[in-house]
Image (cartoon, rainbow, N blue to C red; front, top):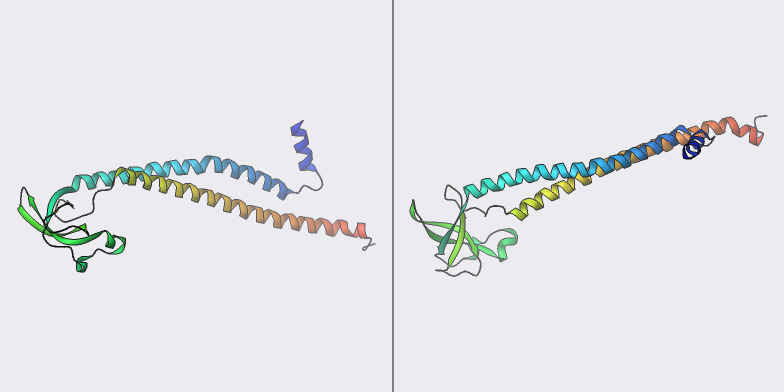
Amino acid sequence: MRTRVMSRRRRGPLCRRSDVVEAWTAVAVAVLLCLTVPLAGVLTTRWTYADARAAADEQRADRHRVRAEVLERPSKAHASSGSERRHATRATVRWTDPEEGTRTALARVPAHVRPGEPVHVWLDSRGREVLPPVDDASVWQYGVGMGTLAAGSTAAVLLLAHRAVRRVALRRRLEEWERDWARTGPRWTHRGV
């Protein structure tokens, strides 16, 4: 019964080819949204998570934390830039390296630290001060964020394409109506007789 009703609608005098194209496009977009958006999100999440995880593992292998002693009071002249200004400044610190002996460097320390207090400093394999390695939560956040961005972008592209098809279908529909009215209108209004 349903097939019969739908076939009658398609063959009705008011149903144009553009109506059928628009209806099938809506079905195709719905199916693509259900399939490609989650797939794009999951694949992107897995890919970016794997890359971020590999980078974090490299950082963990290259960086190590040492306990250092603050030698001077942190000054505003060595203040860190950006939002860290209130929470961290730079000061000279000293630590003992098993291979190289006692070393000193300018490092980020909490703003409230006093000379002689211990702090933890992250160093790379060359002995330069670096940021701590990326933690697991940040790796997950990056992966999920990129997956969400990919899913949203995929959905936006599909919806924009659907909108473009609808505009073209509307323009064609209006052209078909104008053409049909040009043929039928004179018979109804008795202008061409």
